[in-house]
Image 1 (tube, rainbow, N blue to C red):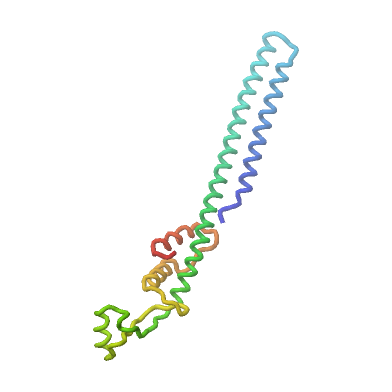
Image 2: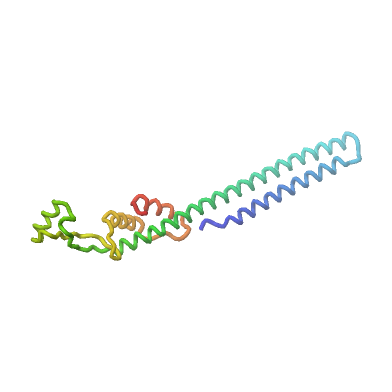
Length: 187
């Protein structure tokens, strides 16, 4: 989603090749100037001027190397962010799918529970409401025959309300989805 860094790295290699070419040309020019068989003020001035040009070309080559380093550093940073997004997506997609499944498929089940399985207050209420002092009716959440806590259901529903649909694969929004899962106690 955020581009292929291979092209950026190829540009960095090209800049380094250009820098090497400048250094090579500068070195060859300086060698040619030093190899002049002429003597005198004019020949010395040419040698000096070629030396200065060679130094300038070396500085330009260094700038190209620094630009290449900056491109490589940027590509590395983008790859690191893409890896973070992929990890967040891997975790958050599973959490989103689990929460969506729970929120969509949880059912309330009413069960008779032996009165000694609940506290004394519930015994009094159960006996008063049903006329059967030995049992109390309790409403619980179930998913696939397994009891699910009220907190889990509330967390899943809150998370799905905040993130009603998952973002596209590779989107930086997966980092936010992971944060929403944590804030809602999902996962």
